[in-house]
Image (cartoon, rainbow, N blue to C red; front, side, top):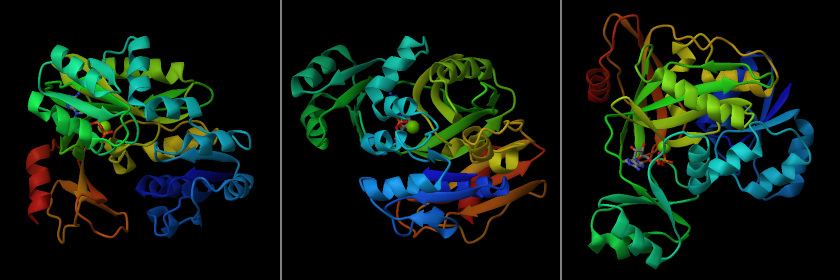
Length: 357
Ligand code: ADP
Ligand code: MG
């Protein structure tokens, strides 16, 4: 099968690798000349607004999927008339707007943070009276890796926060004091079969994921599975879907969902029987899903800004190095390492020892 992928970043590259292993062929569509997936795939290098080229691309593939959620909706609406798009445009457009996304959580009975739409300075001052400081002000559209949001610490920050955004379609969110951040990566195919990976426990700094490890047994896993199921069914979802949660004691509060493969699922390449990438491709190409069972303990560490020269691991651990082939830049995700062991891994110590080399 010929699979078209909108977006050619590292997620597109890892999706393409999985697709080739299954005997498929991939073509990516991305305006960046040196995007990572172009290292291994045929590349349509045009703007997402180039409709003649989108039409040509569409004719060359049997199904279209995407690897990032900030695609212009006009691009998808245009493609929808020409080809099959999986996951659906509805799954994508809902998560593109943080307000719609949170309303959907609410509608499905999935707990989420207290929030309120903000579209004027008056709205913001009103919210500031009802929310306690600090709270978060986020752009409804286009944020990623902690970009497009600002913490409002006191009333003296209100004007700075307001001026921070060009697009004034905003959402204010109460700041959650959580014990942990976790995510549930799941896949669903056309027949409604679903697979759930181990719960992922995630560490962020400055809004960017730093590391993730799998929890084969966790007291909140069943809850996370139940919440993912609600979304998967409601969206009649086809592909891999991840929900990010704040965990407060035994309570899960949904933060956001990603209608695509997710950074917290990278450990599944070596750490699960079938990876999130392969299951996404299996789902969108109408193949039966593979087993999501984990194979031991895995820790995935993101390589941000620079790549380490050496990697030191314990004798009982193996490591798998992934470089995305990107030009180093501060704050840029350049690759990741997965550490795998049959013994328990202490994520903080292990992460620190990798960075120390
Ligand atoms: P992005 O789309 O950039 O991933 P998120 O909403 O997931 O945006 O925010 C990035 C990180 O910022 C989260 O993983 C979390 O660590 C922190 N964060 C975001 N929203 C809240 C909140 N309402 N309360 C507490 N922390 C938050
Ligand atoms: Mg997030």
